[in-house]
Amino acid sequence: MSSKTAVARPETLPVEKDPDILAAASRLAGEDLCSIADLSSSEVRAILKLGHDVKHNPRTYRHALDAKQMVLMFEKASLRTRLAFETGINTMGGNAIFVDQTNSPLGERESIADVARNVERWVDVIVLRTYAHDTITEMAANARVPVINALSDFEHPCQALADFMTIEERFGSAEGVNFTFVGDGNNVCHSLMLTGAQLGANVTVATPRGYSPDIEIVTIAREICERNHGELRLMQDPHAAVKEADAVYTDVCVSMGFEHESTKRQPIFRPFQVNEALMAEARPGAVFMHCLPARRNEEVTDAVLDGPQSIAFDQAENRMHAQKALLLLLLGGLANVASFQ
Ligand code: CP
Ligand code: NVA
Image 1 (spheres, rainbow, N blue to C red):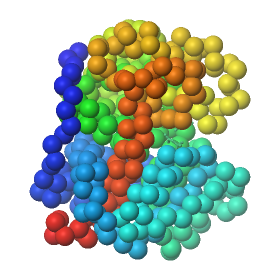
Image 2: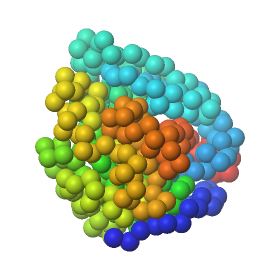
Image 3: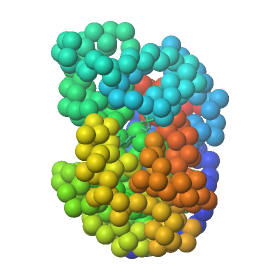
């Protein structure tokens, strides 16, 4: 595996002339984002390039989504995703409405199709956090406005976009970066595999036996990797997985909805804890990443999460910038930005 050691921030890009961004603005307007696999490699690159520009030049986009209405319907708790979407649209002139579905799962009171047929009459975009991934795809199939996956039991695409934006900040590009995920081969892992593959990273995933990523995602990620000259390796040994890693990523071992498995999972995941000893086996200068929230001293120790290699809070910040870029493209917001006309 090749690897990256340079630490450089990407230069400011001439976004108005960037062919990836212009093509994505045309193709993605009105589309859904249920999975990273809904996007091409150049569309992933476009979102990240625009995300960097939004981060560095927020005033350029402050009226891009004037009067646009976004609804967030969440069946699970959230800090980062909710606030990143709300602050994101508020700082571009739009408005967010939050609907707490934690005690009223989507599809229970009325069908998901009927919810879609109502909600689309009032809002410009629907952001969903659900248990079942099918809830998101069903809403997307029935709503005439874009639907965004804000985490399901299968994927967390908004997280992965922000994470690879953070990797680009750190390494200049994700291409050739040795990216290692250690832990549960679940929703976050799935979206990271697909995004890493889209960007030409070398992705290694180490999970306990029985917790490996879904075979459908593995198959798609392998196909994408082949096109982009990256690698995808699956293993059960966290020590072998972090060798030569530029970035070591973990997630909780008990995701929302799996709390009843907590006692069973703790000992299984214990050897996969990211601690200082494991980080010492990665490349010097490797970064530590976590989607958060962390269960401190379970999947990651305080020393690593709070240590100099951790970029977890940069990832959290970038949730907002990456999601702003996504909203701009799905809602056609660049048409309202003077420099794009
Ligand atoms: N990483 C993430 O999605 O955080 P929240 O659950 O707080 O939204
Ligand atoms: N895998 C975790 C991610 C939380 C952001 C979960 O689904 O709970």
